[in-house]
View 1 (spheres, rainbow, N blue to C red):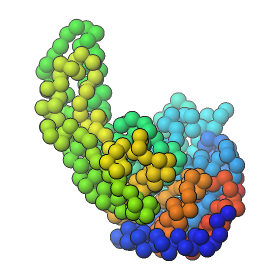
View 2 (view 1 turned 90 degrees about the horizontal axis):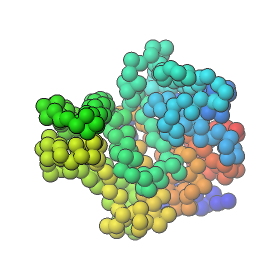
View 3 (view 1 turned 45 degrees about the horizontal axis):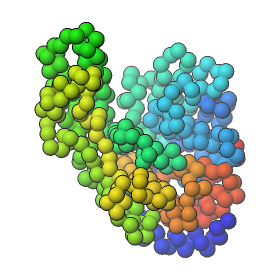
Length: 388
């Protein structure tokens, strides 16, 4: 068990670096006051009343700590962070789930209810009124999660990294999210058309041209906004990584897209024959990627486990800072099982971060109740511990 002195020492080392990053930018207050779960994952019926600053779910593996965090994520983003198959979030042998959250936003209470019944569509209600589109809810409750599952951002394919960048931008830019939804719908239709051509040994250049124009209409602003986001985001990310690593390592994050050099419509036309052969759309913003590097080498191959963890935590803390500035509301922060994965230095950084008055509400999961309590006792904020 780390002593109080160790944590205070690391607090003093990192506080100066971190406070600069998280100065209040006029961000509004947002709190989750109460959470009620019915048939959500392993919870049959559970109710939580939360502290305004730090809340800890502790207990053995498999008891539901991460599920409680995921329920909060579900209320914010309208989906699970850990299981994209919606019906698999319903408790075994149950027909539905209900997640009920009472929030305070800008001194006004907001009741958000997310429910799903087998065989029916998911419903999200804000103050008893259902959204026509779940996408209209995105951005109301900004949230950042740091989890061991984030390692997928490094080890998995480009789709995972695109989802990260899209998720960050979408929480503060509704037009971007709508463009993305429309782009993906047209992309699916264009792919179906290419398969139809192959199966029926036919070709209709005019129809394909219509899809090319529509993809360009929505894909071009997506590319532009991604590029602008990266330009703003990278300096924040590098500063966060420097604070975590002690400034001894050089990392980089870049946006890889063929649209940097060529208009999307030209790309689609040039690759028309190839697309017909492979029966799917081989170019476009749906093929973009993020390059993660350390010392100018891919961090996936050349980064140690500790460097990869530092990279991911810096990525998410930069997301927090970016969203706090753009959304005008301090995001909720979810820390899933991270104390078990961090060395003293990184724990010190987290402690320094959450000890700042400008920081918002934080939810932590951990397997060791005593360790968690010792950590939060060293933070000069109120807290509540839930033993599951």
